[in-house]
Image (cartoon, rainbow, N blue to C red; front, side, top):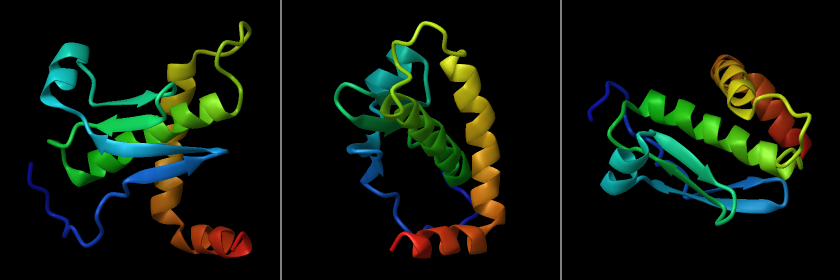
Length: 116
């Protein structure tokens, strides 16, 4: 898949979510066709997989979506009986947060600097 953005920065190979470090990798062809997904978060093996044959912006959105699933897990929300539907929450907040990240680099830089 080609896109119109220069690939100046490679996608990270891992992401820290709470106390956990999730590896980030490309989904395999078998996983893509078997599961009919473009990304997944394996909370047991601490792994995020993303289908690589998409526009880079879509890959970024999927990465944030899967990070939100990891946040759900790190926040202790897995297995709770009175929880809202995880997928609905992740979709709603993932897309909004992606826009916040894109539109507010100064805010993210300040937050990052505050925790340096």
